[in-house]
Length: 288
Image 1 (cartoon, helix red, strand yellow):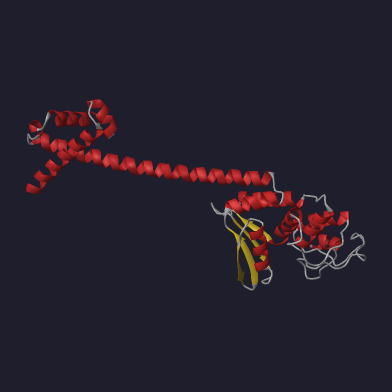
Image 2 (cartoon, rainbow, N blue to C red):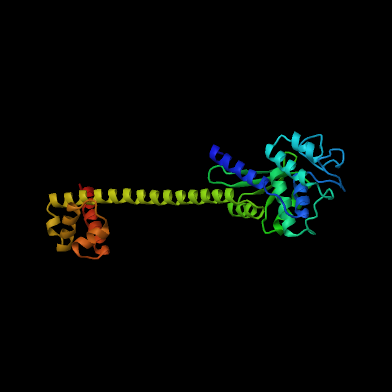
């Protein structure tokens, strides 16, 4: 992944990390997604002695939210945890109840999960978003995503569950639903730009191939005309064939359509005349 793509992913994560849930239930859901849920905690997490230990955290000591913000190796997660901890950690259980939760809570949970356990790759023209979770969690997460209209594949890889999207449309839908804005617009603009560049390259390649074939055909036709004229056979051909031969010699770069307009005949008639001259020249070459 290029430095520009890495900067875009970093900007997208920073934008998601800056979202401040307005609902207490969304705050609880995002904390659970981040791995900072508590079991019945009611105290102020700024008092590290009051809050219960988080259910899961990306450091082995599993400190309380405020301490986790200070010790997290990921600066984005540290900022999220510190900001959320300042609002107070609402009571919540250790597990997120997807089926009983409204959509806004589900998206808040997925936002936290993406920040804590997700990765986004934009290498080349491919878009790849992946969650790395415990093996037992992978099928449930895949089921949840499917129920939300964003089906994902999953597998166990090196002892960890990997839940994956490789569709840029699904990744864009997911990021939009969890609150990405400006960074997502930039991502979509890059995807459109890549698609346009790919289409332009395809057209240019096709045009280049057509031009090469046209140049080769014109070369064969000019050589055939020269052969027929040198042995006198061109003079025995019909007026239309001789007219087309003269037009080809005067405008070697002309297409069949151009020649047809020049001599006032149908394109198919021009093509048949040129093919006839090539056949006659080839027959003479084989005879000799």
